[in-house]
Length: 579
Image (cartoon, rainbow, N blue to C red):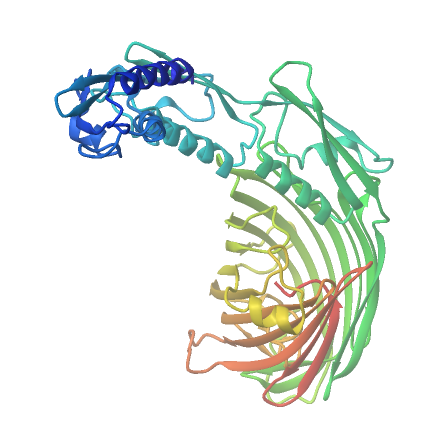
């Protein structure tokens, strides 16, 4: 903003005038007295407002330093482009007149160079309005608010290059730096496009530090890299900044171990081999097995990445043999049996919507089930045998912050499964269930926990996590199609599938407390049940509570949960959070 600077000239004139005045006063009056103080040249700004900042008063000795301060104070009001002093002799001493020239009256405020926000958006931040005298102090605050708006939204490189004031027309010239080339280096295995798709900016986009930081956090959380660094260089165009992303890759192939133990059901466990960045494509491949009463073998291959243009997909095969499996009714064992199952599935989906918060996924599922060696019966023999072909559709709204190092926000899934007598299917039924998950950092515990452990920071806070799932059905569900509650992924402290039915309710709550960077505690409470053709009854819920630990390892987030159910204690080992 250009201002008329007359201060040096004004100071020289003031010194000359005072010197002349003091020389004309008799020797007995070495300190002339101010007789009157007024102001001239103002048309819109009232004199009382101007003189309100003037410290030179009638009846007091005149002071060259005070006059200088008064001129500075009038300038500081921001309404004037010129301030001068007129000193003259009067009968009772010295008259002081401050001569001012007002800034022009504002006719319009406009912007140039802005594309991120419209003129209407920016004018909401400007208090300078047409019809008022232009005030450079007030307008500087307006510019500060505009700058803060850009910076708060991540556009930290945006600057106000100039302000042109021509008459009453004000034009604010804004420079919005843009993204130049995005250069990715250091990757030998991971394909460059797999990295580039996680950086949610392209050449020509406004440079946004928040989007870049979130993108880098997401890359780091993919598990492909030991480290991800960012550098900047001038771009090919004056308003462009090149982004250089340097990665240090790590092994993504892992061997996983899962172990579960119940005081009644004994031990079970297995091994998995997985690669979360298969051939550098960002795809997930896994083979694994579990041994024990529930033995199974599986192979899966999937592309988890999806957006509006790219489909996520999965394909898998599972062969399972359950020996000495119990069938429950209302939590009471009805019989004991063995079961074989073969399962093949294929699914695909993608995101939609302007902000890509929504997605759909459709899965085709074939199962061939055989129940045999039925024993210890109490009159029940309605176990599933035969083939089931179903189509599962899932609609998801993901309202979490995808780039934070911890979950924050909510995720809602609506699921509909339709089994049909097609492609060899022998059953027809419909299941529909809703699942909601919620995550939020817990405020107020930071000081206490930092005194105890020192592990709490903005990227590793205490998190409260909750999940609710409710399901219904229509048609005749076979045993294999019933809702199942109980076990390591639903209701801890109970046997797997201990509660099965045509309707279900499940609630889980966890408080996840970081203790060290790689170690955290979890306090949890689970409640739920499944009902067979009886409807949901919230007075008939089974619950479990317990404590768990999470340890970050090269193999992933190792999980141990100890749960107290109604009839037994169970300890669960595995990787990853339950939800």
